[in-house]
Image 1 (cartoon, rainbow, N blue to C red):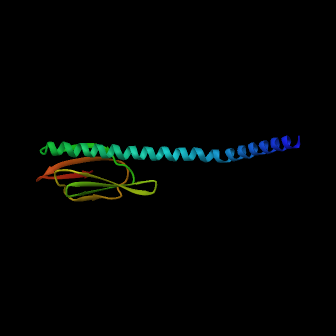
Image 2 (image 1 turned 45 degrees about the horizontal axis):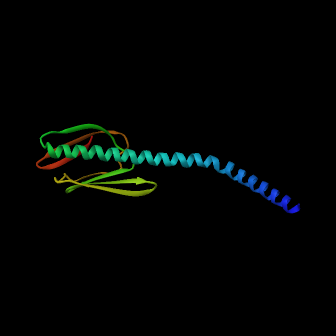
Image 3 (image 1 turned 180 degrees about the horizontal axis):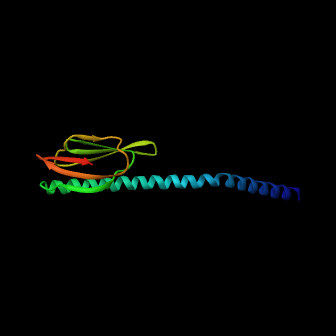
Length: 137
């Protein structure tokens, strides 16, 4: 009989400790979930930006006598480097620097956009003397 009573007391005490642990960690679960959704939104914003710029560059390569103008949302923590035949994006996710490189058939006018504030800019892309000129105005 004492053996059964000891098992019941230990089980009850274990459930009590588990309940206390869950109630203590519950507020942190919400902040962890919000943090993960913020990361997902940042990655989505970066990918939308990359796709928009890539589409614009390909449009200018196919139509070199046209100027491309479009309002674009510039994400936070993004550096853009234009050199030779490629565009290099450096961005920050979870305190780690990530890098993405796109290569094209036409050269760019060398330029770097470092620490621009995250806001809306006008993306201006044109072709000057067989060089692609990209500006965020």
